[in-house]
Length: 317
Image (spheres, rainbow, N blue to C red):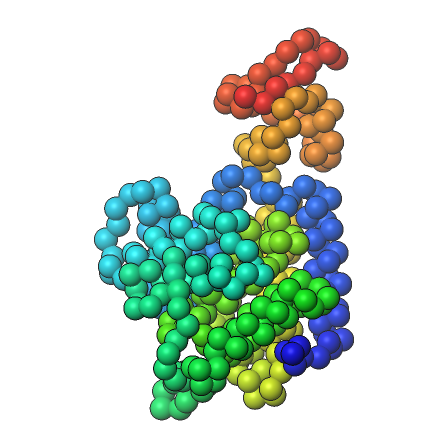
């Protein structure tokens, strides 16, 4: 059964805006950011997604853990980060349309943090805020059937991925299939669904915007609960995605320096190329800047040079 939601004018406008920006991302070959930016964004994603759940470690501490350094902090918080690092470094090892893959991811994400990680809950749960029950999840014995239906929607619906990812995120939060880790699994799985269609989402830290204003996130969930359909949450998440892509474009347009250009070009794995090929990627730089870049790339050991003048070619090392 298709989960209930409506396609509003706001949703249509956001999809148009996101699609245009994704076209710009692809046109500028920014769908695979430089290694430096990828690392920064992964750290932001892990930090923000866990901060929403109460993790106290800073971006600096997460960076240290990513570099296999020791940090001082609560054992639970450190373990949450180490688990998340493993997951986000192996995102392509999970299949967003496969329920077994979903359970495997939860087992890795929540391993040694809760009992029965990777298994659906076997008791009733409710979300309490203050003295008020904010959300009473469906009975535990319904969870396997509800999750099966949700994965059927993912596989069989001809709805676009931007909407399907939001619907899955909301419906999974509503079902609340696990005793703990539901929020981070919802955000992780939305990323995976989007990655299948748009590779840039592997490195797009939209969780940062959620983390910066968590009340809006919880309000969108609550409004959708109240209305019995995920429309408000779809509008909220598409807006978050739209802003995140905009920030990615702004970042690249604003700060792409010599080192960023070289790292990005090397990441394209073009084994042999000319200065003209390099300038076709970075259309705003002069031939003199391109020559300086490539000279620096040789000094850094990224490329080697063959030939002279207009017969010069560069090889990726």
